[in-house]
Length: 298
Image (cartoon, rainbow, N blue to C red; front, top):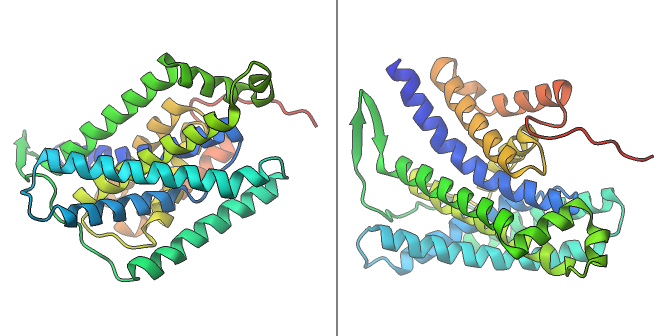
């Protein structure tokens, strides 16, 4: 039982990272019906921005305020990156065929990955310590301060996003654009502005995930966004692509499943489990856990 609880804590910590990244996928899909395959690379950029900001603060002792400054800086930087990607890559082809959008997303992803290797170098870098480290033991289960920070910050950001979407004027406009973009235009909503805000929010959450993973697993590289991005996409599909609570549930399930497989079977299947779940979801419930089947006119 102790082993199960330990793996559950590890899974929730990892799943929180997937959930933050998956929220960006599901928000963008909700307003544009676009799979932003460059989103995982924005997560990578967030980790690097956090790395360089933390190096600038090298003289400061590890503390929660220092970690907060690094995270907010990374989130702001990546929010700007998200706006730039939407404005110069996706907006010009927004009315084009779905295949054009897909190819554009893949092209942006490859561009960011190769540019990152040129700018940052292909060698991995190691995240400095941002916050004080401590271990806690509860009933034989080991809890690290990094795990607790990841879970707490992730859920706080998810709650704030939920509040923003449901209770603010901009959030209501986002829901209107998601429901019907053309009708939202007729109602006087600036759809370009709302779409840009959606990209900014999703990218900021991905940046937060990048900093949190750097705190927990302090090794980053320019290609780290590929696998994490794909698994987060699987999480978004599992929860119901376009559904915000579904993305959170999907991320937690993927993270927990991955860790349980490592603990009880073999680390060989660690990456395969996410894609196995994707195949099962597509076969048994294509709309995801919280998604709704939609009829499309032909």
